[in-house]
Amino acid sequence: MRALIGLMAGLALCAAGPAAAQERVDLELVLAVDASYSIDNREFRLQMDGIAAAFRDPEVQAAIASGPIGAIAVALVVWAEPTIPKDPGPWMALRGPADAEAFAASVERFPRRVSGGTGIGSGVAFAARWMGRNGYEGTRKVIDVSGDGRETPAREFVVQLPQARAMADALGVTINGLAILNEDTKLDGWYREHVITGFGAFVMSAATLDHFAEAMRRKLIREIEHNPNVALR
Image 1 (tube, one colour):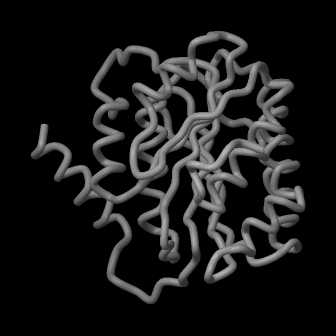
Image 2 (tube, helix red, strand yellow):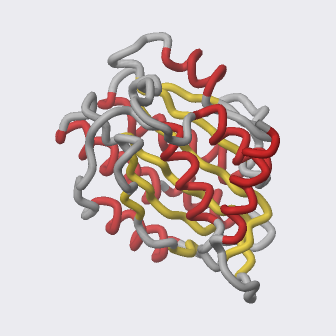
C-alpha cells in the first residue's frame, strides 16, 4: 500500500511537467461535483446554479479578498462513473468581484456530459492531478467534494476512496465534503469517516438539493477564510 501511495503521488507530481514559474494564490480549490445516476438533470442544474450563486455572494467575495495575497484559483471537475473520463473546467484566478462573476457565469453554462456510477475516489484522484498542472501555487490546496451518495463498488480496478485520500494526504491536499441528504440521511457521517482528510477538514450537509446553494455559500466562506473551527454562519 505504501509503495502504491508513493507511486500515485509521484505520478501526480510528474503530471505537472517541467518546473515553471507558478502564480501565487491563497488557495487552490477544486469543486468536485457529482453527476452520477442519482442526480437527475434538474438536480445537476441546481448544483451548478448553487455554485454560481455562492460565488456571486458578497461574503464569499469578501472571503476571497481577505487572504494575504487576495486571490484564489478555482476549477470545476464533474465526476460520475469511475471508468469514464472526468469533465473538468479551466482554472481561473479570482481577484475580485468581476473575476468571481466570470467564474459564476462559466459554471452556469457548464453542460452535463457525464453520468454513471458514484466514483468518488476516481473523481478525487483526478482533482488532485488537476491541481498539479494548473500554473498556480496556493498556500492551501482543497478539494471540495459534493454528492448525494456513497461510493459504488468497483467492477474493475479503479482508484477508490482509500487510495485517493492517501494520494491527497501525500500531496498536502485537504478534502472537504458537502453531503446532500435527500437519498441518504446519514451520508454526512459516511463522508466524515470515508471522504474527508487533511488539516481542518470538515463536512457540511444540505437536506435536499434545493438547499444546496445556501450550504455551498456557507461552505465556501469557511473554506476560503480557512477558519475551520468557527461556528457556522
